[in-house]
Length: 628
Image 1 (cartoon, rainbow, N blue to C red):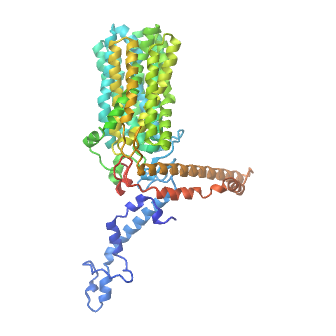
Image 2: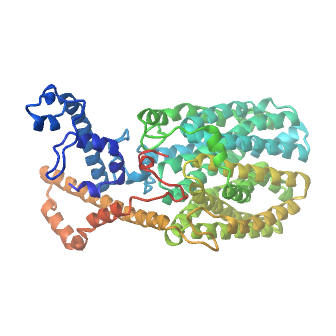
């Protein structure tokens, strides 16, 4: 067993100086050191003047009896932390789980350091999949009316301005709700807020068929916009489950696959349900008035199930963790105020120029192809699906590239990436505005869609670094920027021709790309100047070592599985290679790397006690045992 000097730094935090002094008082004094003065808590015979030597060292047996369990508990916890230092799959002592399915960073609240995308096991991968499924369904009800707007306009005899007014109100609610939901997530996690939002937003979605005027459409879409706040929970959840070094990838997967709900809605509502209901009822009006009940019922059912199949954090649920003292209580107003920094506002503007573009395209794509190329609703919805379908890979690629550049270049790499992506996005929007043919419009739309969604992933690779303790508040503010952008562009589309509106939107996106120059995360290098703090460099190196250690642990698990399978086959008389021959083959091929995991462990322990967190805040020993 490793010595206490090589244990995780959290183990040291569990034995306070006061407790060490109390434990030391029960031991005999060393030679050459004067014995301490007699304590008032001593046995009765300590007052006997005939035995002064014993009276100066005797201790009340009751005190020893009480301190022994404390010493044993401290030793047990220390041993568990030493085991954690050797085994990246073992859970921290404060966790509700004994082991995890993927390797974790114990100094970061058991956040995972790898993504095992095809796993459904709790808590990490279950949280990731629940996040994107929930956001997918929220997007589906949020934009359920969008593919039907042409039919609604014809039925109710609405003007273009009235249609775009309803789209603007749809985003206004999400702006306010996203700002509120950030601090809510910091204090209550993402699980219950996500479930409540899904169930509440499903009610007005199911009531869309009751609309009879333009004002009624605007009001009902205002309340449907509550579903847009789910984005904050979908980005907070993976940030809570995965280390910041891979937060860009995790957030990109959740955001991208969740945004895919907007694309699916175009084809599900416009090309599947609408024609089917129209054929059944024999009326287009009855069709659009009825079909929104279907996505509303699906989302409501999932919201009712969600809290019972997932976790708030790797170590368990927030309510349990607060009772165990493994996380701090966060004041709502403090979180709200702390999230509003200069970096947050710059990311707010840049996110308005990527996610805002995606939101307005979810509303505009079908209408644009209806008017510009005289397509039917079913055909225009299929083309609208192409725009959103780029989320299958584009946003995740943006987050993945951001994480990889962070390992090589630090924050400077992340900032350069999002700048280039925004610049390319704005350029392609301008090109799209001049498209004259249907094929050219579809091709340029798909290209700028890829840049748009990759930029979203890159920006949320930076968000977890803005403020360590209040990631939810930062995610809420930045996320609301997307809805503000959608409102601004929606006003443009409401009052301008399509070509002029697209040129305006592209120009704003290009201008926003240069704002990255002014982003400066404390202790990190900026885009053009500054250097990474030594703590940041240590954390980056520690992450490399953890990945190497995790890789060896996964390989070891695979080898153990192979041995188990061979033993089973031999016991059943099926023949095959023996365990001994497998071990010999492993020694022959991997002999040069036998000591690598141990070396990685020692190096990881040496770099694990950081003096400050990467945002420039001092990290205390208690911070390492808390989740925030």
